[in-house]
Amino acid sequence: MASILDLSEPIAVLLRKGTAEAHEKAEHSQGAAWLTRGELDRSEYIRFLMMLHHVYSIFERGLDRHAANSVLAPTYNPGLLARTSSLSADIAHLLQVPESSWQSHPIHASLTSSPPQPLTDYITRLQTLADSPDPSPLLAHAYVRYLGDLSGGQFIRRRLAKAYDLEDGAGLSFYDFKQLGGNASGTIGDMKKIKEWYRDGMNAGVGDDQDLKEKILEEANIAFELNSGLFTALNPPSNIASQAVDPAAPPLGEPRTPTEPEHKHLGSSTLPTSPLREESKVVFESNESSESTYRISTVVALIAAFTLSHFVLVVGGFTGSKGAGKLEALQHWFETTFSASG
Image (cartoon, rainbow, N blue to C red):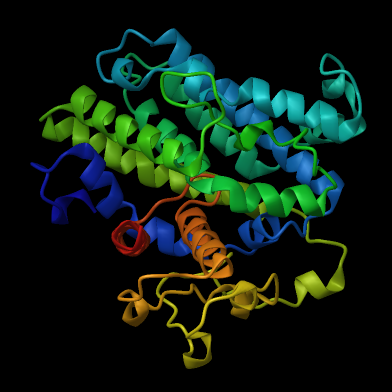
């Protein structure tokens, strides 16, 4: 894949372009759809978080070990990005057990006694890289995971809060990030700033080394594949209706799906919770951008649509060039339209 790309471009650009195919594949993951719609059984969602905990604990320990590595150092910021402790806290809350004891729970005992092959493959790859004389490809895994988590936004957080009765926010710390350089909880805008900082750090760490760019791009596609594998290890929801969704349909929505004519006026009805075919309609009516005033419901719906399209870029860590291009166009329209009306 790297051979058809211009390796003189920054690594952040190459990763966006060079992982597009992996993003397309991830969009059609049934397991990702179950997760992002909050349809997994509660116990299965907990099991998924446990799998993520194993993944993060391995690669974050690797990042800690190699914090001084010239490629990894510019993006090394565990206080901002690390997710292992958040996952542990969320799992303990969902199980209603002390954080020190959840690893002895039957769900975790079953997972570790007979781990699914995709999880074994994932953590084996991460450990191999962490033990390698050249740990720089860990950057690819950090890119896939962290930028995916940052792209999740508040939409998925609210969906899971409703699905698993977590309305008070406890049990959802995995989806929370602090502000860059601060301790306050980050907004969607703050997460965008973190991603920009991260891309700049990747570019600085990798520099103009084309061999390194090719190696990291190759590893990023491996990371996407391994990450997608976790979704194949999920057990289907016990709710039969959830299993009836077309597995070929993209999870949460596809920004390229055209908006139907009857959606000319934005409102809450344009963001249905089901079925998936309806979720795929991202509201975007550029021919109304000349209006100087907007109803509150319009603004709320547009923000929700923006967050929805943002999250579909990376479910659990996926990005892609086509999705990113559409997102940037939507964001540009949003910012220019409302700055003009304000």
